[in-house]
Amino acid sequence: MMSHRRGPHHKICGLLVARPQVAERRDFARSGSAEAGYTLVALLALMTLMALFATAAAPRIHQQVQREREKESIFRGEQVADALRDYYIYRALSGRGPGEQSLPTSVDELLEGVPITGGSKKRQILRASAARDPLSASGEWRLIRPRSQNLIDFQRSVMVYAGNLLPQPTNPQMAQLQQFAAPPIILLNDLGSDPPPRSEGDLSADSSGPFVGVSSRSKNNSVLYYYGIDRHDLWIFTPLFR
Image (cartoon, helix red, strand yellow):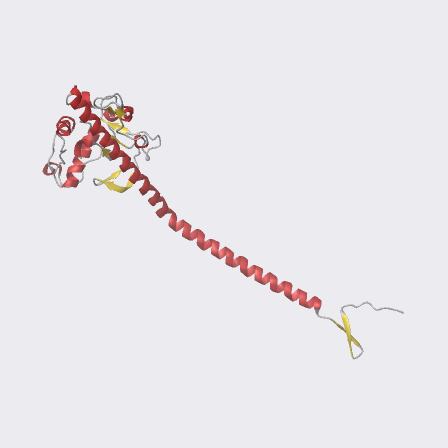
């Protein structure tokens, strides 16, 4: 008995007719390729849109990151100013008297703290994290000396910001320090209505000796304003005007 293999043909009225399987497969392949092409085009369009959104958002993200770093710098700088106040008051009351002899000469002296009355331990007045500037590449604060040009410029900015008023410390020791360390008061009538000029450098700020404040070593323009000042190295954190 002979057997017949089934092939891609079948009989209709004695005629062999080809089955449409091959054509259907080709149509399906073309349809699948077209759908894959449409998917790829849609994916490329989506990726292009996402890249455009990311490019547009990058400056805002960078600005927000800088804003947060500046907030942290101000927070730490004002902690250093508070530590300077506590250090000076303790030294002035312990017999050192008012003047430069009661000021620290390094941030390390603030980190060491001040002795507790009647005890052998020291009271911490500055956290280790506050001793680092988040804006400068080195992380080191720039030390501001009494009567330096940087301090003069900052005092003028404070007075312009406060409407011709210089904030006066409530503590008597700090009031004495302000008279000693701060420049003479200059009225706004002498300054004019324009902001005070910016000093591009002050050698006394990096010299050795007692200091009354700190500032950042970054010379970049800021997102935030501190007493109306929009450059990092011109922000001075000092207890003299607090």
